[in-house]
Amino acid sequence: MPRMVLLAAAGAGACGGGCQPIPGSDPRGSAAVNGERPLALQSEVPAPQTRQISIDNFTFSPAQLTVPAGSTVVWVNHDDVPHTVVSNAKAFASKALDTDDKFVHVFTAAGTYPYFCSVHPHMTGQIIVK
Amino acid sequence: MDQKNNETGGDGVDRRKFLKCMAWVGTGMVWTMRGGVLSSRVFGADAAGAAEPGDFTFVQISDSHIGFAKEPNKDVTGTLKLAIDRINALNSRPDLLIHTGDLTHLSKAAEFDTVDQVLKGAKVGERFYVPGEHDVFADDARAYVERYGKGTKGLGWHSYTHRGVHFVGLVNVANLKPGGLGTLGAEQLDWLKKDLEGLGNSTPLVVYAHVPLWTIYPKWGWGTEDSAAALELMKRFAAVTVLNGHIHQVMQKTEGNVTFHTGRSTAFPQPEPGKAESPGPIKNVAANKLRGMLGLSEVKYAQTQHTLAVVDATLE
Image 1 (cartoon, each protein chain N blue to C red):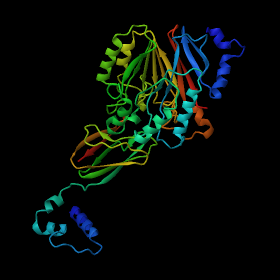
Image 2 (image 1 turned 90 degrees about the vertical axis):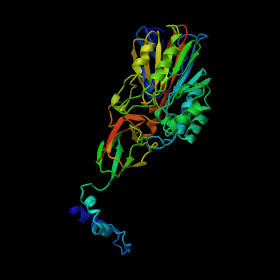
Image 3 (image 1 turned 180 degrees about the vertical axis):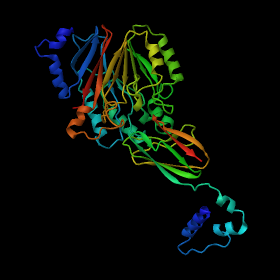
């Protein structure tokens, strides 16, 4: 079960500086003891990620990005011209992003999220959340 | 002015060479289409022959991008002021000043304030505006509409007749569709149809909007997807002049009764279509070359001929 090993390692890392685990709240403990969590832990749901999309030369790069649910996507505008990041279905919308401005959105629900720059509509991209 | 006079200027100077020279020193020129012959003369000069009582001029400025402060122009307010100086130095006071959008860079209140402050200094009759995409970034274009929307429809489209010429200002930077170009939309097209209905075919039309109403380069979004529907409504008119901005360079073409013209920016030049990775400011411009790439346009209306002549000038 490599997944459990990973989580255990992450848990140990988070607490590695010598913090005191609160009895009953340690995820490793509860997973091991009450026998309810291992199912979730064993499933192949990948951990949420933080991924970056860069805007260069009027292009979203990568134009298509697939992430696990709960992931954070950060758009950074590297152009000298302001852009926006707006979901076609209005699920999210940034303000004007000037040079080096960022827009952050957390994708909680699975689905396909096409988006575009509302002022340069030929600029399009897509986030796929699994 | 016939073609012969036009070529030699009546002074033995080869007009083409002269204009080439004048263009180099930054003086603009006028292009007039008469009888299928493209003629030209120097910016700011009086029209051939004495001006008739019904004649008038107006000016177009565009893409001032107040708030932009990067290469190649860290003083866009300064270059806008230069454009206004050029207007104020014209022989005859323009009746109208038309700004074809991207007044600001980020639709900020302070940027609009600066635009208003500078344009206040223009010695012109009336001022008219259409928004560029940079003017409608925030709050569903409220900042723009609050300032310039009085007496207009939608996000600022409008029309008026001035000394027999019918002017129409269109908005093609709002409610854009993913993957698309500039858009006028059904509501505006419907309004345009009604607006033009009562006009005779001989009424000269001047139509202005930010994004070109002809397809220049779709890959960069330089076109308006439903412009054909608008142009269809103008087909019956003898003379239509279409003025646009957005692409920060002069381009002109004539198609039947319609002359399309895009004006320079007062802020920064953009590459020719397809000559760079993307649109956007040309950064590597030598300081002494920048003004030659910025400019404004003067349009002269000669009532007797029903002709409109567009004069492009740089800020050099």
